[in-house]
Length: 210
Image 1 (cartoon, rainbow, N blue to C red):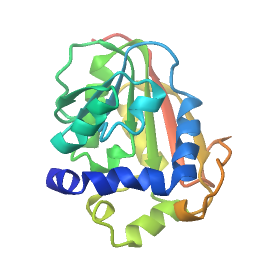
Image 2 (spheres, helix red, strand yellow):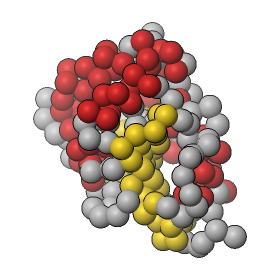
Image 3 (cartoon, one colour):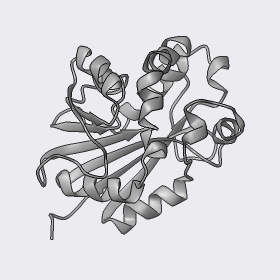
């Protein structure tokens, strides 16, 4: 899978320019819960399309080509995977996994690793295309070089993973009520899920490492 992102990194990055208002809608939803201060890490940082505008200083990704672009956008990057983070225990104030959870081979382990590197009261923020939404069903049926290799998750499935790894105080936000190519303005962000195609799930690490 990593080779797909290496080979098609320019095509991947171009999507955000071609679907500007879908992208901006996603950014606005993430801003609802992402801390404005503190040391942050994005797992699956890709080309830095989210980390750079959101001020997330650190990023990790298995694709070297993607990371070259993220580095140019000012993100401090390392090559690696979410399942084996090369960081110390309780190093970050928040961790973001935006879209990329569906490409991680072992998402449960990545969430466990996120818990490990988060400080007490640190926050994890997931941005997903909900498997049960109109958008999730569209992507699952679409012949896409990227999404045909993805494993989509429901909000409930990821909530279960978060709870099982020790996260609590879970909240949900949603946006994108049309297909990306039909969106021509920044769509509103609402609490909850079930209507929007893009869902942001936030949770908190309430206890220190045992």
